Image 1 (cartoon, each protein chain N blue to C red):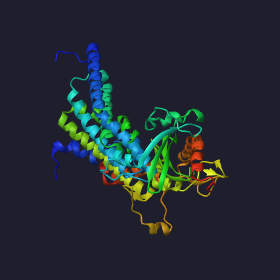
Image 2: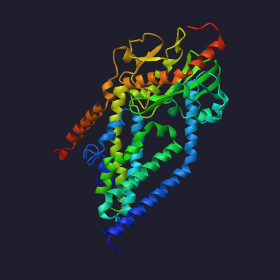
Image 3: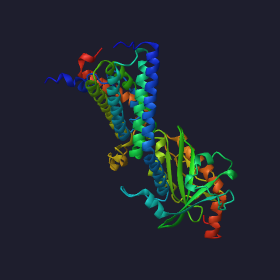
Image 4: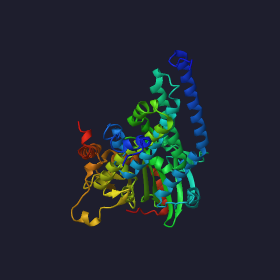
Length: 244
Length: 206
């Protein structure tokens, strides 16, 4: 070949052609796969929300259908526990951005579900683990105090250690725990086996996953705190006498 | 039994020229994804696919690539393929894509891929390059699976997520070895494999 492939013009043109070809190729791949990916992401979020009320769609079952069957309503509440008329879609609220704001400035999504055990209120939570974000959904009984079910997930916690927060063994511990103690919001502590907090309910941490476990505790405290007024209003609706 | 010479690029990396235990490449990801068997398997498939495809592409381009920027060209090709694998996984198998999270992106930095591109496909035709890619991907995968097998069995008492150590053992005082889950034990397991492998292949001993 007459072309000198070590010459500078050839190298520059080669680079340009290669980069443009790759860029076009990747854009085509991205554009053509995007609808499928977005549907997957929405389905995955619905699956996570359902998981907190102990529902897992069977293989082959359409997640969106199951979601529509159980989740009767979704709405936003404000810091005072009142529903807002905001036009924002509660499902589309970016919880990751909200938890960084002051408590009284946050948009607080609630998903109301109808299960065989009565109405449940699902609250999204978001926080930090050891390596990256952790998040989840906590479903409350209609007494606004007792946890019906919890779901947690993570981006990159250590497999076998921090990543165990996504296992039922960890999540099932939360069932039946109360976030209020003597009328005060105490959240749920995540403690090393054998230890317990001064006040309030607690679950066992994951051995070897201390930072992730503490991350779950901080996440719950921070994400659920602004919902206190809302949870109180549920308690008052249910019965004027406080349970626990 | 003489192996067909044309298949050597496929067969050699499985044992005699194994990328992990003989060339000692790709150790980083061998530590990261081997706490459980399932991610190790998916990682094997992904690495094999990327390796085979990039080997073929670079082999096709090898006569046109300017020598001074050949590493950059190789990296661009590998990075593009890895992004495609990641996007396809997200669209078709979201569950697995979630399980592997960052590890897919990290295939780009897997030394085996750069090593094979530079050492083999830059100077060989596409078909042998393809075989070399498959061979090295599987050679890498064998070690990953062996390490993950022992780490998951001894560290968590499960295989592919299923409990295999009977409950009665735990009742009798057996407990999982938490140390197996930590990265250093992957290194020690790899070292044990190298030990066994070297003692069976005297010609590899230095």
